[in-house]
Length: 266
Image (cartoon, rainbow, N blue to C red):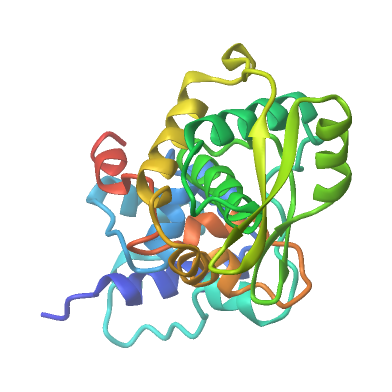
């Protein structure tokens, strides 16, 4: 008896979904699972149970006997390859307007949490901000401050960060200092006011804490290597905006969402 593996199942679902003109969000809603779970199915990282297979057959209009047969031809590529190649992916939701207040309190809290760490210079701070924002998006499917990132020199760079930091400096919320480490001048920031944690959700604070716990003691080189190999950065073209939706295509050790626990509850 022929047994369909997860990768083949995912490819066949992609092929039929695209032929029907359905987005991942549309299909996920139709079979009552989250979009990240559907992403995992299409990438061959998660199987489907009998009930979900029946729903898929009903929504996509295929015969289960034919779909599960060895002779079924599936030629569609996984969507992650589609992202990496050329066309700009559609956003599941429109990106909200940049929230300066939330960004201000997020960066103040990060600076407070990393105070005294010799490895946290301006470059490292940007990468921690990126990890916090994309980790939060992967876990909670919502933006923190909605700041956008661009891929420059193979890594992440917050857009309009100079003007944002200037506003914080002018308002005396932070202080920029120059230090030397191994003979190299580095820029660092000191908080001049305390972060207002009432301006962020407890779940967002938890993401910041977890991210700092993970990378807060790494060297600059370790953080640079880690972030540049994270899927959203890795598949983005040089000079391009880094799409938050790509957080759902992360694999170990980058993924921060417990899909196994989530799937058992669906």
